Image (cartoon, rainbow, N blue to C red):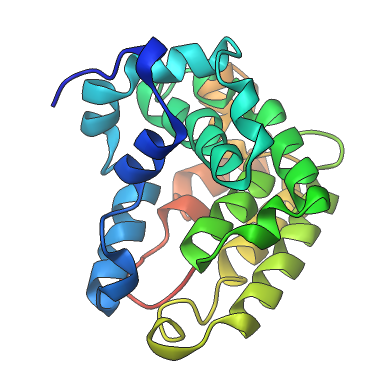
Length: 219
């Protein structure tokens, strides 16, 4: 694998990198593997090897014009919300583009770009981004994520139904965390924030929404 030069990157490069070719035709276990790799660090090495320059350029605003189309907005969302979590893992920079990513999501929900996406595995990255970004409106955004996930689950038909039958579960888990703490406590050591005793117990237990078991079907 080689770095994609930042100046050469196109939205289709990002989407082809992130979504396996023929995912629409793959079986249940392939979809389980897809989500496990994307949500639990399985793409770290590939992102560092190929998308480091692209991620840094995206953070500088080099690809903001991609948001003019539904596919481009999705690609930009991945660059801002997903790639930094691998490239800058365990540093504050991992979350540095969350606000911008959420603005992209909120605008895309209003201008039809979300609805224009075809597959649940594409739309789910909007939902994930809403859950990621801390802030005073976090709980309201997570409530919206739950509603979007439930609606999306109801729209899934055919062979994908089993894999995407409970897409509302992850945002519901996030909702409980934000209701309890108002933030993601597992980030406290990264940010240098002081944890409350209740947060310390939560961190010690390690039962974080992003670390859940993905062997069973979920979104």
